[in-house]
Amino acid sequence: MAFTISVKMETKRAEKYLRKAAKKQLPFATAVALTKTAKHLAEVERRSLSKHLDRPTPFTKKAFEIKPARKQDFKTGRIFSRVFIKDAQEKYLRFAIEGGTRRPKNRAIVVPGQATRLNRYGNLSRNFIKNMLAKPNVFTTTINGTGAIVQRMRSGILKTLVIFTSSASYEKRLPFFEIAKRVVPRRVVIEMNRALKSALRTAR
Image 1: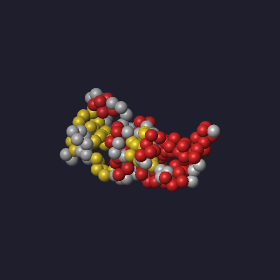
Image 2 (image 1 turned 90 degrees about the vertical axis):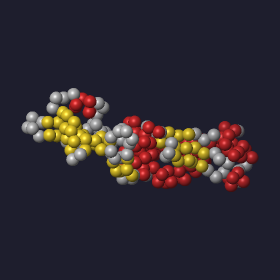
Image 3 (image 1 turned 135 degrees about the vertical axis):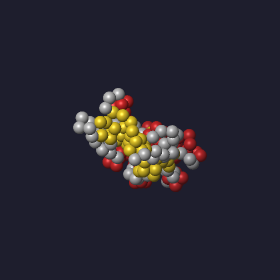
Image 4 (image 1 turned 45 degrees about the horizontal axis):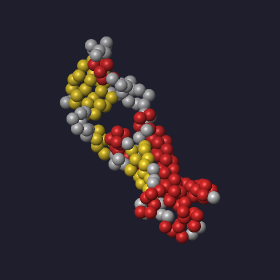
């Protein structure tokens, strides 16, 4: 959970101006407001993937999870909810958020050749390498010292299917934290007003 956004709220000032009934409902209302704000932010972050990334997969779109706020934490002054990226998706989304160079241990990064057919998400299909290597005209080789899988076409021309590299560089593309800074301040006020009104109606 390296990429986590905590949604917090300052409630001490608000308590001074609330009636007794409202103060009693404040812990519950705050927890509800923070949790709903986190859910809203997670959805905004999910929608942003298609805008900033090239054809994100359904698995990638399930990257965001939330931790609800607990009203029990209100008394401690540390009540908050969280939006975070699941560990499996964080391994690669971190490079879209921060940029940088990826150097996986004990395995190579597979880069498709320019003429290699990709699936609708812009990736190699499942078992692509295994299926291609089963063909008699496909074999592994090295190109300028780099491992590759090539296919000998009927014309005799070699078509590069994939290249294996030890590292890959990425530019920052996904404004994960910037989105939160824009969305949270306005949304948490909206959700707090709604939660407090609802709590007061229930308390009557």
